[in-house]
Length: 305
Length: 295
Image (cartoon, rainbow over the protein chains, first blue to last red):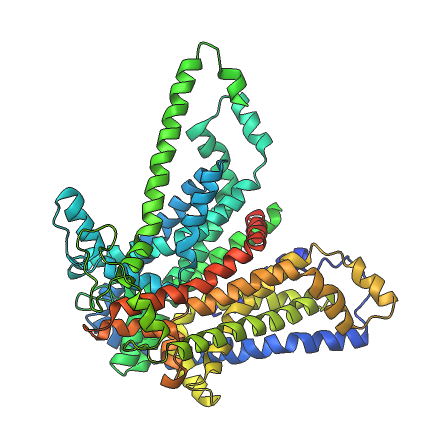
């Protein structure tokens, strides 16, 4: 939202496909124009009251420079930034790459592939808090299912997942991938279905199969979709609160907090709301960067269409 | 395809071998995916079906030795600790979910209709601005929302959560409805206008009926958004209006919590969206194909 000027390039781009208004068509006449305004008003009101106002409020709360000095000197802040970058960077990229590969697998025909897809989609339908709680119990240590299975099957004494910063952060990332992998796999599956079989047939005549087919045909054709989805997913992952809050619960000793949970901790547990807002608002430059890249990509795809 | 080319030729055996290897590989992959997808869900059932309250321990039995529905019974009869108000909380979740769905559909469809069917000038600006909502994650705005709901007098009420959810669901609704709306010819509206149809009639008689599939997608999206949400419900709702999602978080504050009942409650809570997804799966597939084609 802070990058309001960036809204203008997207305007005309969207209108090309949005309104479908032929050039020089008749103007909207009076009564319909009034209705149009009336129909748009509820959304405009919601947008101002529940998007613009809270955002402006957040910027205002975080506008004191002293807050950022306080943040930098806080022992929790820099490790949290590292965690956030790892969580988003590793979580999103691993997930998207796996989703791209798996979408190729699910393209195969056969009843059992379709049945497997139905099971594979389940994590997406399981509510986020419940999924995170399930992961928490599964990894709780020797009592948990994962360590129990490791012991029963291989005789390995599994680690205490939440007693080590990197193992705990890794657990968060795995839980995040588990929950969101199906959604993006299906998106890529849909993308692959739009690629014409003729292209593959032609490539096969030229001898491109398997890996080379993927590198030279599938990936270039899906590259734009892949990038847009990755950027969008990065935005959402930055705001992911529930995974860290309920899987590793930020522990051990607050060492796996991410910005979203640190903001909550400052605001509601330390009782310092302004510092909490400053913590999350410090991600604004990254958010703006992602949004600019996203809008550029979206425009690019308009041109290509 | 290739079968006809390869079979019988000198490369036939090598081709067959590769085919067997691919098949074996996909079976292994399928097994891994099955375990990956089901392990946490399986653990939920293991804990829920345990006869003992405080049991989360895995004792090496793949199937619980004494599966018991005591956990589920405690939830349904509201006898378990933390779950004395389960049905009331379930009602709250349902109320928030349905209100979010209805309002998102109404506000989103009215705005999309005005922009794309009534040819409102500068309407595309609205879509662009709406999409910018996603530039700042909802969880980052919880503190301002907490303050603002006080100004609006909504603190503690269901409507504090509903309005926030609608604000975050509406941009997606507007985007999807606009994409889908392009498939309906504008001439249809013009023909109705010649017959004297007003804007309201165009919306009710032509736009809404033809947009049913897209509206179904938006409904699923909005319900899943509300159902998945935790932070806003935990912070903005009063104890009386608490939802099922929030009770899950309380597990960690008490080592003696009735885990089997809590997990049973989680399973019951998870079922409605799965049922909805299953019921509307045709529409989901259609919208995803559309989203894929966009890239």
